[in-house]
Length: 216
Image (cartoon, rainbow, N blue to C red; front, top):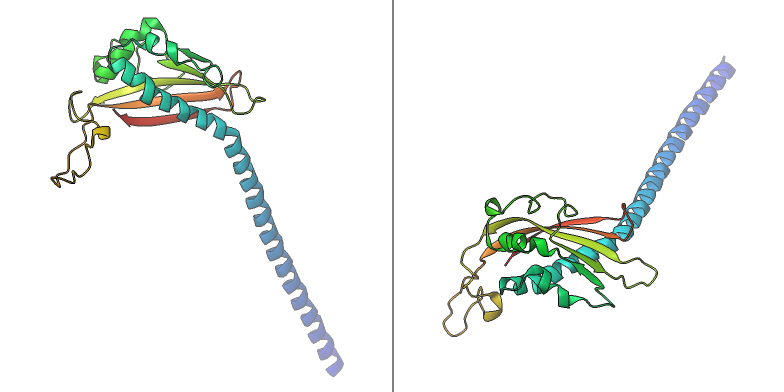
């Protein structure tokens, strides 16, 4: 009787040990699967980030050129097609395309709200590759990488808090005057929504689209 009881207890102990071992193996397998999943996902995201980083930087570079060089020239009276003519730098910016037929459209975008634009090819669609205002060709820092084509388009214009005679930030607006301790309000005649599409030449997948709200 005692022998049977001992055998039964031994079998129960072996069963408990087997179940415990299965639980430990299952937990370990789950942890391993989770680690592999996050490792592979991280590698994939890192690869995608590296792939699109150059296109993103090309977009940001084109926005800088448009807002700091092109817009002030057009606002001062120069037509868009003429403003970009002398901006070509073969080593960095080998080509800039701006259709002379859209000079009036671009000026309307800069000086009037969206509802007053002439229409037609002067549209407000969010796709920067359709009727773009300016197309930049930007060279990569690597000679093995194709130049980037960046289409830039103003898709919306709203009036700001002043006309174009307002003081700009460079002349100390929006900061405290030490002499009078008066805060001068910065003037923004217009707010522009700008869309970009940047990609290496002949590429349809390595694209970066950026939307920017720019206060002029």
